[in-house]
Image (cartoon, rainbow, N blue to C red; front, top):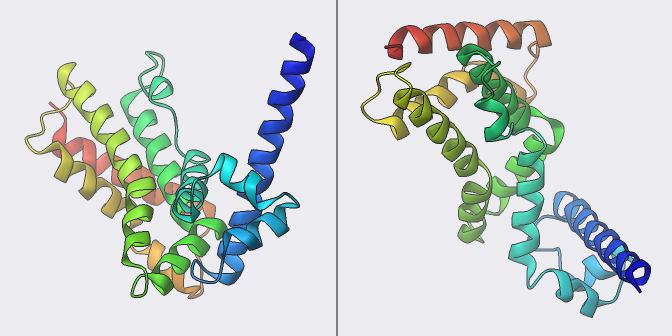
Length: 207
């Protein structure tokens, strides 16, 4: 009986992942408007009822796609507050995770999708913002508050400072990558940019 239960759980996870991957392919290929739950079912090779068993509507599928893309690049809070990790190294993890999230081929495709659909479906911009950038912002705010409690930083408006950190990380490279304007930055240039941003950030706010 336990074996049967494990198999059902495993099959359920496989179907969940197949549906999400199918929806992601369709969203990025067809856009939000032209992607239907029927089409997702066909693409995932499952019934429409099965799709609704795991996801109540298209908005939820869209949110999960964004969350998965973000989680792929977002360090865990526990990893950031590991005593063996320096403050600069933790910020480096956040900075690299953020730039990788917004400049990866998938991240850029999702951003273009949202911008293309925002006039017809303003709510998907809110879904995108809440499921992606806002989650990363909350992570940094949480981490900075922890560092303030430890006496490492002095910051009055943590939320604004966190926003400024990400704006500095985006710097001059993000728009170039988004528009595919060459020469695109090399990995070494991005590493150098993030390191200099963190150094400036720490000079501004270190206790």
